[in-house]
Amino acid sequence: MKVVREILFSIIGISVITLLILWGLGFFKGAKTPSQVANKVVPTTQKKVKNLKILALGDSLTQGVGDTKNQSGYQQRLAKKITKTKQIKKATIYDEGVSGERSDQILKRFKTTTKIQKEAAKSDVLIVTAGGNDLFQNLQKDVTESPSQVAVDVNRISLTYQDNLENIFKYARKLNPKIKIVMVGIYNPFYVYFPNVVAITDAINTFNTTAKATGDYFKHATFVDINALSVGQYKTLSQQQRLKKQSTDDDIAVVEKNQLEKSKFDTKEKNNYLSDADHFHPNDKGYDMMADKIFKAMDRARIFK
Image (cartoon, rainbow, N blue to C red):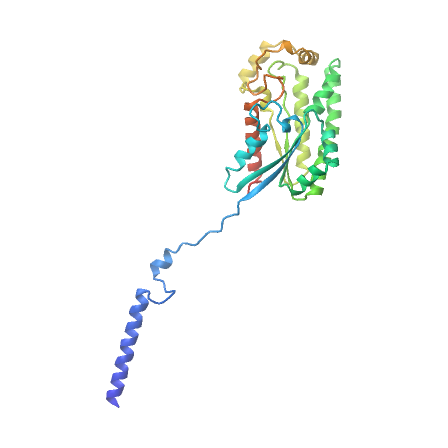
């Protein structure tokens, strides 16, 4: 019996030693050495890339008047920037821009066009350009008015403009509660020719302030300031002061007269960001700037996250 016990103890001892050796070498399935555990790579879960759908609703700035590269103004330029982000694989933009429309006409078209309503319902973002026609169509009627009367009229129409924007935004949210809103401001196409006509500069500022304030009432809404198009390449204060010294006109009536008599303008537009064809709308460079500003505003608003 003593011999048997010695043999059993020997077998058990050898088995334990063998098991320890095998464990140390990692022969058992699922066994990991300390270094293997420390160096284990934990897979990260990445956000799913998606197709960002955008409804572009508005006037000539949405339609892309002045664009010579057939990129629908800012739209395709913006889409290219968006698809370069890590989160967005594709950007689909529904083009609903009509040149010459005021904000009330844009609102009416939105509420009476089934196609636009369906696009809004499935879009992630609504980008609106409106206000330029509201302002300039009314300023044409005020060319004989005093600066104080022009200011009164601008304040009046800015309130109507605000109501129209609110209704556009509310209707979009009614169709799609999750849609994010991007409101694009307006600019002064006459500034480099008539930098001393303060009435227009003040009117532009009033409309932009109104648009921004309107957007501030809505969650997930952001305002895009494109007023840099007004000064074009004359970006510094000293450059703008030189422009003012070169121009003696300070009457809004002069702007209207020269707008009607295009021959008064240079054949080549003085503002490097506006069209030579009409001296009013952005050119390709202008739409590049516009797309860049819209993209950066959307990025700050975390729309791509």
